[in-house]
Length: 594
Image 1 (cartoon, rainbow, N blue to C red):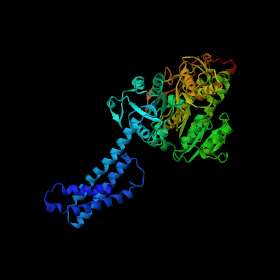
Image 2 (image 1 turned 120 degrees about the vertical axis):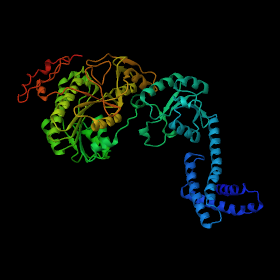
Image 3 (image 1 turned 90 degrees about the vertical axis):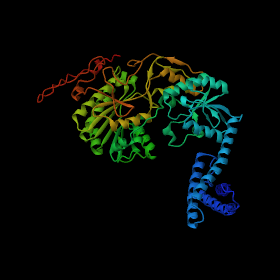
Image 4 (image 1 turned 180 degrees about the horizontal axis):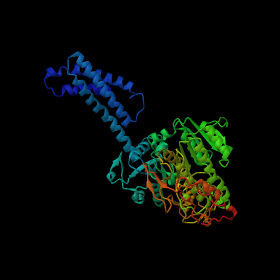
């Protein structure tokens, strides 16, 4: 057919403008030139795989390849005509354009008719697509071409410029607020969210609208999960909790991160934990010269090594089984490894247990951090990142106080040492060990009840990969002595999290029980303290605050009460020694107040 269009194009191009019988006599010759053009086009098309690959008729891929084949064939034909000298070479170029128009017409007609029939078919669940952008269009094409289970009946899009559009016969009928009315008018039973970059806050709103309209909700994964591929029907899946709480586009300065890590020796404390292990996995992708994983849990180290290398032999010098409380051995380990960059993720983090055992928080989170800072300084570390928590802002619990002290110690080392010492503060991470999500999931599995401390308690949430990406960015951009604060969006009510998990489980017989706030817990967490100034950085998802450095000499005095101001050494004139530390206080007499 394409060869025939070339013959017809050349005949019409040269023959139609001429009525003189002498001119019409050259039509057979022009038909032969057209046949040559067709042969050239098919030959080029075979080379460009126009005919070997089963393109969808009229698809962008087929049209683009067809245009390239016609252009090359037209240029080759013009060259042949120029060599022969019988006609103008422009005949070849003009012939390719006319032949291309003939070739595109039937193809596009086939596609339009196929989509018209698909959109008008009666079978398949009526589905509304939210998002008339690139993701929605790709999803629509997949549904029309390959799917008989979903029948797209309408688009919704919040962009007013897209109102009253029709995409392959499917109309845009409004925005998300029109979902109830559109579902009623179209008889839709499903909603497909085709916006891979949608924020979790918006997704929660859409979910509530879909629930009110009685629609089953499906979503496309985030853009980074699609690995650069165009979203299609095969990517559509059920909504999960990570979508509702931790879905946010994270744009990173990959060059700055690679400059910080590539070719460097990187050491991670707490490498077997949720954050530490994910940090190790992400650091590996940036080409470090070596990554040293340190933890006191041998099984956790084994799991981390297995996830990175696929081998869990526990061999080599890159696994260090060590407790950061052991000052002497920690210093030796740093001296052997000679790290350039350190991520300090080792900590005790369970609020309730630490309220009962504050001495453990003191030994690990405070003294352990001091040990890491000392060892890093002696080893000549260039950058150290201390992983903190939102509970360090205006602390009301042992956990928050211990992490606040760790931040202040890190700030003190930034003034004492030539390297760069920063802290990173963020809230809850989805799926971390011992977090509320696994606890709720297990309670639901057992049939309930799900225990929530208070109906109005709310927390910040972020996925572990997202948090670690921003930690790496903080290592590259954080200023010496700063506490980097991650933008975690809006806080989420834990009661809503529990109800969402129950709903996603499909169970209706699980109750929620309110147990009351535990000692040291806040109703709402804050990432920035009342007396801290929220300062911008060069990254839109990172801010910074300054904390007062704490001279490690004060650690000899032991832990303090929450309500007391933490002691700060009085600056001394040059040459006058720092006064001795206060007498140690008995840990047993220390009282933690909310």
